Length: 346
Ligand SMILES: [Zn+2]
Figure (cartoon, helix red, strand yellow):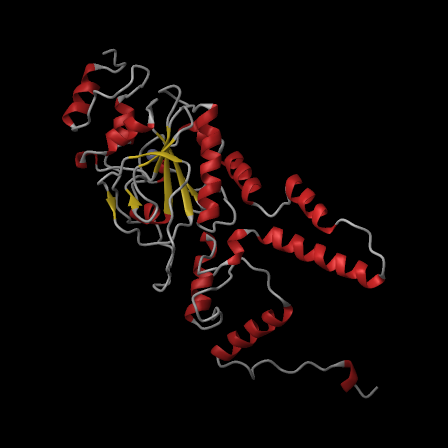
């Protein structure tokens, strides 16, 4: 069998207990592949955990895009955090989703990912979303993130991926965001001040996710946000027009139509994610302030663990928050009353 790898790599694969029989001739498994896809258990030393209310219950689901499932024993069950991040990795080789599953199968690999994407655009699953994969060399990140391994078309810098894999990656990220109520992907290329996209090179001495995908993280976020965002699509707009078409014959009729139109637009913009309980999912860089406000009773949510952190605030809600804050600080009387114009004698 024509396996395009150096003999030492073949030996390493066999010694790791990985089956070589199913490896296709076009697949490239290099030493870098094995380095990337091994021993990613890591530790959680200097990565801050997202503060999580213990009462959070999340209905975890898996992606309907998955066409091949081979669950790896290398994971922690269940994950200890809600899903509020995505970590994109590269395989560092051109492996099929079946081979990625083979590599993650032996316990000696000490590594896994939630999903894998082959150069053919097919999606495999190795760890269910409810569980924590061993992928990003950080317990804290893996407990928060869905991890995705993407195959490379060339096993060398800048570790490019195929168009099909790239398109599938964007679809998969959008699917993950929708199902886990992540409203927006935010890419900040700073390991000390990241958004909700994380790269392996920040926790381990690895090139992962390769410069090809690293440079495209902003573009990926934009494409995903367009898919999940609050913009009406052309189809949605046409559907809307169909529903409210017809001439108004009276002022009341016209007002009714305008009201119906406004309601339809606001319902469409809300999207499916807003129809259920919102839970307690502050965007990652607001975790400290939202956690503080919860501990101090400034935000109380709805009593069922729903805090609507991403919802807009009315002026009256703002007034209540200021009142709660000063009351909690015992400082309601500290502010002097202002003099209103009607109180002036002149
Ligand atoms: Zn990686």
